[in-house]
Length: 277
Image 1 (cartoon, rainbow, N blue to C red):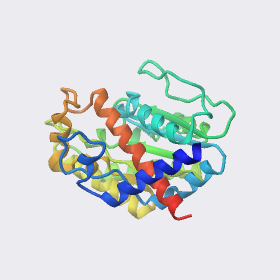
Image 2: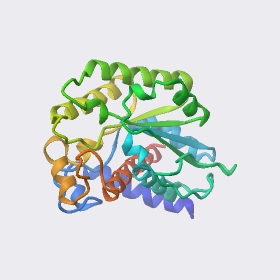
Image 3: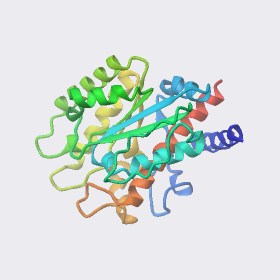
Image 4: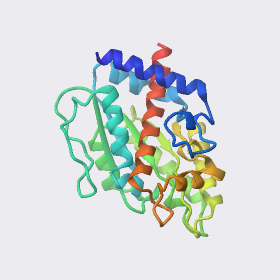
């Protein structure tokens, strides 16, 4: 039964690969969204050991870290829910997650998917270069670390691309040194549109993240481009009333869409790995 479900999900994911950009309005995006792309992972082969471990009947532990987009426990909860639907939830206890609770999963002792989330309001890459936070991540024994940062790095007229790159490199290096078999998946921000955060900063942040992932062999989910990029992202989010008035944070519907996009991108990468084996 579970194998059949996986085959069906992989078939849908493989179809998404073939559709490519501008196919979003015909799939999971609202019809008012324009110039979107089907969600896929850059460098999906990086995640092959992750999928192979899961489907061999072992534990797969994911630790998703980030800023307030993660701390809100809507974005990551949706990704977790959809991955559990596809891969099973037997490895964790049922859990009601809200802003007032932790999003650290409790394991049952059975193998399978374990999805943890750790968010910090206002976090930048530098925020997670902290002994306590690194120790917490290490204690969860991750096979995959998803890093959703960059929004706060882009704030203000004093944005320093070299400093951001150095902090991102330091964080990724520490995580890999402490967890040598773990893989890293970077995600770009959904976009930030406050007046003191020029669009060129968000564009530069996402460019730095893409280039870093390619140069260092990391996986990347480009959420910003997927939802429309520099020209259409803000228009798309606002067309459905998915952004809060602060033009930084999103309503539940917006975070739910982000979570679904990330989940589909991961399942698509799983489909690619299955097709190649």
